[in-house]
Image 1 (cartoon, helix red, strand yellow):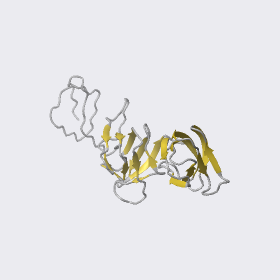
Image 2 (cartoon, helix red, strand yellow; image 1 turned 90 degrees about the horizontal axis):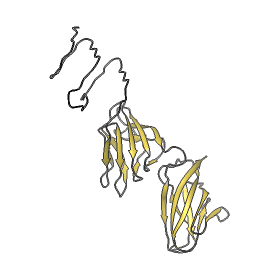
Image 3 (cartoon, helix red, strand yellow; image 1 turned 180 degrees about the vertical axis):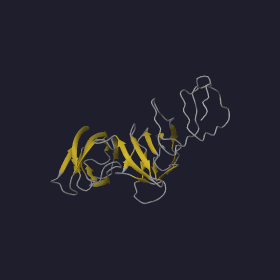
Length: 250
């Protein structure tokens, strides 16, 4: 192959043999060198410097169920009404994406169905501010690689806003983000209005297996045998906020 001591190419160059480049200089007022696309069919590439990706910043619309990606790093904000994403489009085989969430408004549907652009997760995923999710594409759909926060905070922050016009036992499902084998959660109860307390049932309708959130604010571990949050309030129309601080599994 001929050796060229230096020069500028303003048009496409087709190289059938080996290309060796010592230095690529840019001539666009320090804007850097832009390569729109590179296909490496055989062999590999070695980068000695920092390799990054410009972030795709996306805010989901009302009721949006699909995230369309154009880059490998996505900063994602949910709609104020919440979003349940069923598909992520734009992926190619072998692609790895990292999603950084800015809020707790996004839930991703978990499915093992071989359906284009769907997501196969390790467990249910509900977003939180500064949480991340890494996915890899197999040519058809996405598979979870890793997530954060990992461990005790899959659904931290306020998980329930509770008030009732009765003192009967009620139950609600654990929020998205908790594994199916969750056996206890660490909760903080904050009474926003009222004068009573809240009773938590580790076994439904069994008064011998209860714990109590007393006064205006307290923290405790609560055992849940069926992945439901069972409770009653002692005074009608009291208003309670329940925050999750952690969990343990069997």
